[in-house]
Length: 433
Ligand SMILES: Cc1cc2nc3c(=O)[nH]c(=O)nc-3n(C[C@H](O)[C@H](O)[C@H](O)COP(=O)(O)OP(=O)(O)OC[C@H]3O[C@@H](n4cnc5c(N)ncnc54)[C@H](O)[C@@H]3O)c2cc1C
Image 1 (cartoon, protein in one colour):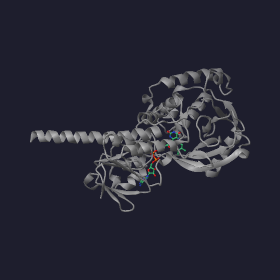
Image 2 (cartoon, rainbow, N blue to C red; image 1 turned 90 degrees about the vertical axis):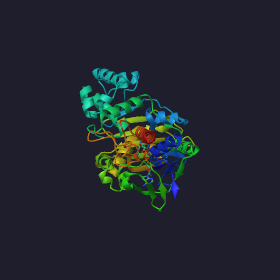
Image 3 (tube, rainbow, N blue to C red; image 1 turned 180 degrees about the vertical axis):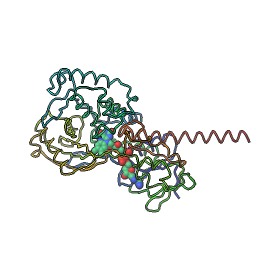
Image 4 (cartoon, rainbow, N blue to C red; image 1 turned 30 degrees about the horizontal axis):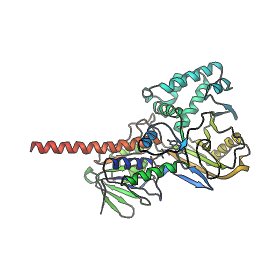
């Protein structure tokens, strides 16, 4: 029979972060990952010499960045220039990203330019928490008058949270994410896979046991206490602490009678966000100055990640395009729209193509802070002693990878504080005897 102080189910960013912090606190941690490699949605795949990220692309200056720095990761990469185009009615226009583009952009009237600049200044300094209970639409309509300024803000906010409609996301977390993005996003050399490798090696140095190709099939929680983790191949691991760093629906599936626990509420309230992703590696850019574009009247984003990060062995340019999807994704139409953006930004790109990858429906997040949410998930599952959740969906106000690292640390902290309460109670009891 195997044993561990804490078992982490899922070896994505949340699972690896949780295991590292548990190990740093002196716990014997075991990570079980069902895929044949660690990283979850933060892996990168190398194709014909070019690195394509599966999921995460930009590391903003939020919780994840601070966590990785605290752990001593090297985070090789650079911050790109903020110059961007905005696509409006099929045409490219400079977006206001500095003084020059603010004054020259044809998208805004003089009044609009003033309103845009003053609102951006306000956002940079704002305490965003008071906006946690209002939607993005409510915030935009309450703070901005000019219709085009509103459109540009919708497009900027969509780009940092990946949600198409402005009525669902709580404005506070998304504005915070915009603040973090405005401080400069980091594009990582050789993609996010390199960061995962650094996390893996950190975990391994701290003595974390990392098992891949092993699927957890259930958690034994008899008597409302975590007792064992059971894998599909029959392996059983004794442990009194389990962190479920999977999706809310997998967490629900793994726990017997989950419908009687908070896991049920968290699964039911979850709203999944998906995107269609097109990545291309080009021998050269037909239009070298066109590197980054937001769709203003379409929900597409294009970024040449090679403008700041080293993403190929031979100088190929790696461009990623994202189509933020609503309720009814249409793979063919989405691809047409993505290629249409590439035609507009880089006409002739097909002649320069080395390799491309189209992923028609990627889960960007399993849930986020939205207006229909009843409660923030985790860190503990209150009905079952020793059970915790982590993952980008267990957000308490953070967005995407920041929510993955923050929720992982919350889970470990909760576990440690419970243990210390139990120890204190035990000593008090002995004192009485
Ligand atoms: C297209 C796209 C673009 C993105 N861009 C950004 C960005 O620019 N910036 C940003 O901050 N974030 C971005 N994200 C989000 C980011 O990738 C995720 O938030 C983050 O990787 C989630 O990590 P996680 O550990 O919570 O989940 P995951 O990475 O999904 O990890 C969960 C792990 O659990 C494993 N698992 C599931 N069930 C079991 C089981 N039964 N037994 C064992 N293991 C199991 C899975 O295999 C997986 O490895 C993007 C995502 C996508 C898809």
